[in-house]
Image (spheres, rainbow, N blue to C red):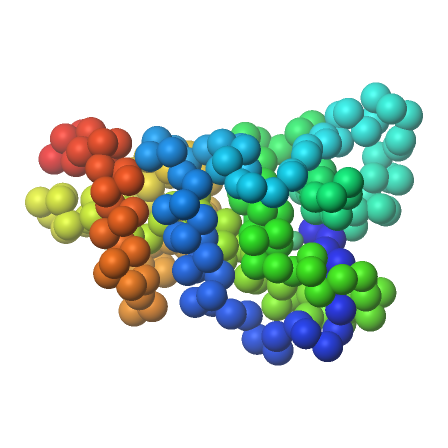
Length: 216
Ligand SMILES: [Zn+2]
């Protein structure tokens, strides 16, 4: 997934906590309290001009698939600066809807984490720098679509104190693979501030209540 960046400012290692906090901040500020989380709704609410384009749309305009892949260096999607804002281009042709949701959240991550503000030195991007930015965007996407504080809330409510990957998959409309990663991540102790956890809990209290009843 392509990003435009400038060498000097790229962190040497992924800023996990920064990416996670930014995702939670974005949800608190622009989420609508509905689960599963709608990335397009968040993008709509953001005070930034973000447009979409799809691979099928590009094909219709006469651009070939190999030109698309050559330009955007990804079979999932990319984000570029355009017209006083950003344009997210994504593969809507041969990707499942959960993968598309993740791609949109990932590209939004590049925007919110400021990756595009590093400005234009794409050709100098080393493998490591590329990996750092991709990891940060993935971390953001995972936290945005399946926020850990909400999963911990559900877990606390369950009598058996257990949550399965397929439950996380259903509630948050993410792939089983992502849900399994979320469970692994729950075991690590990286926390979100309790104030933000509270804010998020309040925002999503209605769907959470329905979920508690479902898994009780
Ligand atoms: Zn990317």
